[in-house]
Amino acid sequence: MVELYHVNKDYGRGNHALVDVNMAIEKGDFVFLTGASGAGKTTLLRLLFREEIATSGKILVDGMNVSTLSAFRVPTLRRRLGIVFQDFKLLSRRTVFENVAMVMEVTGVPRRQQRVKTYTVLEMLGLNHRVRSYPLELSGGEQQRVAIARALVNEPALLLADEPTGNLDPNLSWDIMTLFKTINIRGTTVLVATHDKDLITRMGKKVLTLDCGRLITH
Amino acid sequence: MIRHSLREALLSLWRNRFMNLVASFTIAVSLLVLGLFLLLAHNLRSVVAAVGSQVTVSVYLRGDATEEQRDRLMDSLRGRAEIEGTEYLSPQAALEKFQRLFPTMREVAGELEENPLPASVEIRIAEGHRDPDSLRQLAEEMKRLPGVDDADFDLPWVTRLRDMVAMARAAGVSLGGVVGLAAILTIASVIRMTIYARQQEIEIMRLVGATRTYIAAPFLLESSLLGILGGVLSLGALYAIHRHLAASQGGLVPVLRDLLTTSFLPRSTSTLLLLLGLAAGALGGLLSLRKISL
Ligand SMILES: Nc1ncnc2c1ncn2[C@@H]1O[C@H](COP(=O)(O)OP(=O)(O)O)[C@@H](O)[C@H]1O
Ligand SMILES: [Mg+2]
Image (cartoon, rainbow over all chains, first blue to last red; front, side, top):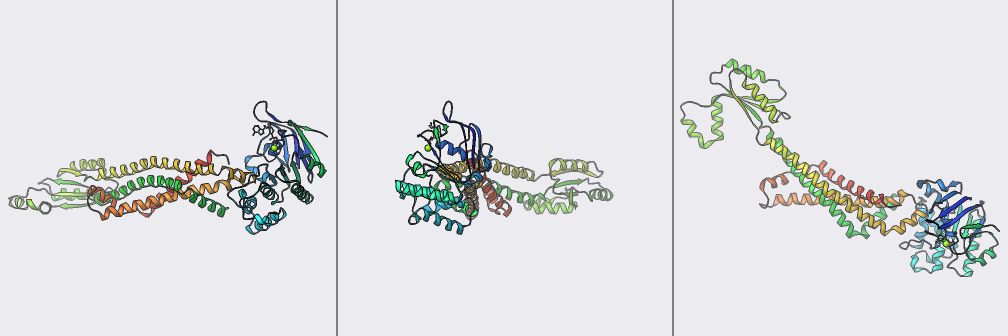
């Protein structure tokens, strides 16, 4: 599902965010990406959905060669992914419902189907009472769950989550992880970047560790 | 997609209604300038068409010209493309015409013992040959015929009028063009501001897989609507000016007023103004989208 070959990413001179990263994530895997703050977790995820372009190396995501992908094909790549951003990236002028339905709206899914799927996923995340609220009326944890709902609603082939439990209390974190496990069992490949060691330990899944941009093998 | 674009465009138009109105006004002003000159040109052209039939070459026959010479002259004029028609004026007919044209001189003419006016042939010139060169050439040709005393032509301010039509059009197009360019740039910067204001939203849409077209369409639609609105405003203003001048007296040079009030722009020209508005708006939109990464 995800393959990286000798991937380097420099932000300007001497700022090596990723150094010679080689890795593979199989279809159906559930993988944690961990490492200290500044280790390059976010950078790696951003390379996968083509928000950043690798300085060198080759990246394959769901069969698409991200390194050579034309700008024209980027939307095609992103529509196969579900992305939970560290800073949520919710539209403040849109309701919770609209924020989630938006990802189907841009791909032309019929209205009725949008409604059904949006309500289903919001219910799964315990947000059914917040459907008509605006993001700024929500707590950090609730906003995070809206971001997760939006990432899941399209039943993506690959879920990328950047610190998805950063704002949640341990109980809620565990619930979210359980939810991720469920959608993983249903076939979605999951890659979660987190520095929450407890969570990783409790989940007992595959772990990739970054240290100053280098992948450490266990 | 269409519904989404329309909704977004209308919402945005309403949210920035003040700036949008300013942008539409600039388009309207440029089209109004163009429209005024086109209206002038349009009415001038109908004047030209009306007066054009007065373009003639007069051939004066000698007093001793024979009937045969006259017939030969008339024959030589038949069937020529540049000639619309001919009219023979006997000295008697010429005198009557003179008296009709100058009633105050009637008596003077009547007291003359002998009719001083020569017989003449008036040649009406066909459309497309009413330029000084063709007229001069025809007059020279006539002069060389036997029995012909003299030939001359008058260009009743028609050629000058025609130049004026061309000038009015050119002035309209260049002035309107300059103001139009400013209008396009205004629209572009207004739309660009809208885009900047929604930069975060655009970024998020991109991240969830929206295509460039999907993101750009509402902005293009918005700028096009602004352009059409400008076109409608300019036509409205032009019509208001047209009607107001027709109803009022004085103020303007009478000739100018006539040229603005005789008739309004034909439908094709009005449509052209609207389309120009649309084009200016769309162009402004494209210009604003060009530099912004979507
Ligand atoms: N847009 C950027 N411009 C310049 N440097 C960046 C940028 N994004 C990240 N970095 C740098 O790259 C390194 C890795 O950052 P990041 O991927 O955000 O790490 P993590 O997500 O593991 O905390 C850091 O040194 C950070 O300062
Ligand atoms: Mg990070």
